[in-house]
Image (cartoon, rainbow, N blue to C red; front, side, top):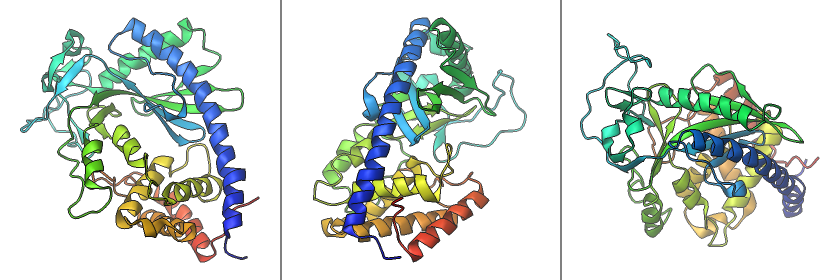
Length: 363
């Protein structure tokens, strides 16, 4: 089979990539309306939880991990004036407040503990034992409250036929949302937005890197970060605003970086890693995009689609083969650490076959 031509690429984008975008945008709109209604009800019941806006596929609280798997962050109110702790003596306890004699694992690079005293201003509700143990804001407790509010809101909004809460092995809140065309799984994550500073653990950019330009770096870091309630004890660092800023204007120099990314995402969903909850998500591919842009910062590196695309796929293949994909901002974190290695090896095999004979799936 012959390698793909420019005509193949344009045909693929028109018939696959654009069609995917239209379908996903439609699904996002439908899911967003439902979640907006539910979070408005939740916010009415408990003002600490903010309702999400209904602003389409570019909503900063909305992340499409796969066409039928979304992540939505729910901003938390009443915590402002964040400052990092220089010294911390960890306390260990069950989520019910009983102290543990032996410590649980310390936070990983992308995780941290959070004390209410780290905020110069905080609502009194954040000091209460329903969310607070010895000064620590406990994600599992916040999630438990949010889950209970979600259950009540589904009923009061008469959405039981469209939304159901899924069982989870952890405290994460997952719901299934029925749309006219499909069922979508949505992970709902209460999130503390920190727009005023950049975390010390995110030692970025690395020295002497030419991408992104220094002026853009300062702009990106000024957007701060998030702390997501995604585990029992530790808050997870998130950089959704920074990531969005990195992508904005990515090809102002006339390059084809986003074109390469979109085609890679489509091939991943159609051929290399299919399914409703794939082991590789759009977020993993976004990290590959960032690392490749940093390694190849010049405009001339991205004039030829074929070269840029294969370069990105080779980077993805290397990461999947080695079971190691560094987080772009917190480089000590392996985003594939807990992925099933057999599944990764299967994807790596498919990528290797493609690289031996690069042909787009035009059917």
